[in-house]
Length: 345
Image 1 (cartoon, one colour):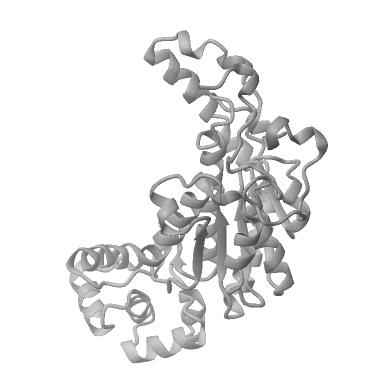
Image 2 (cartoon, helix red, strand yellow; image 1 turned 90 degrees about the horizontal axis):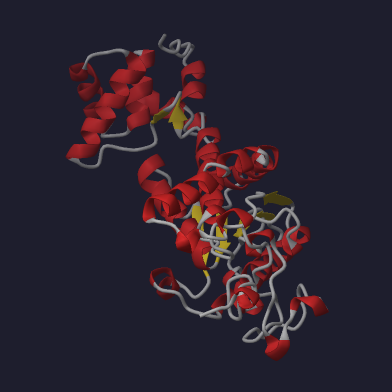
């Protein structure tokens, strides 16, 4: 149990700096004298660690009022993310450049940040039909730490460097850290730069100490949490929103959608086949029978079926056009001399 005075002292927390207890690295981003308390404890100087003046009496309130205070704070997050969209757009372009060069996007995070990263990466292949190697998540402590908290592992700068050893030149490394100072993330960003990768930091601290280790810093100003230091709340929500937006925008720019339809997903089972037929009817305006027939001819490949229907060509010709268009439906249609249909009213 912590007293109010102890609320900002989190030994072994995600936000501990390099060189703290359990870290083999004494260099990196050294803590200032004011960052440490007695006994090697780490005092994190970040907005997420401050006390929220609007929730001092939250422990005296009935459940509904507690929820209202939480909800009121949550409503501020989308605007905070909106304020950093220019930086997020730069990150998207770096991600697209990495994938188009044949490299990959790597996420690095610890605790809540790492779990958000793992979820985002896992959802992209079934949603957009992309190889799992396109976006890879690295969580401090590995799979064990995804299911339960492993204290101290995020404090290891060298562990981040080791996990980033497989990052190829031209890749993009995205580090996620609520306070912007997590040693594991710092080590990964450092190693990535040495290997010729681009780097992005997504944090909830505009003044993050690791910002200098990244080509782009997406510093979302979420402020003090409802419960001081509980970065799984607004900071975590901001990271979820930012990362979802980032990966979705990358997929759109990589041609994995046509209009606002998921055309990267392929019909590999009955449920997905039904979904793809619906997508094809929405995209073409044709009936379900014609779309199902085209999907069968395309061997379940949604984009081949779509180009075949819109350009009125056979599946083989549609596939060749998509191959030279790097999988982008609109570019394939242009090669075939067909204008994409107008958006519905």
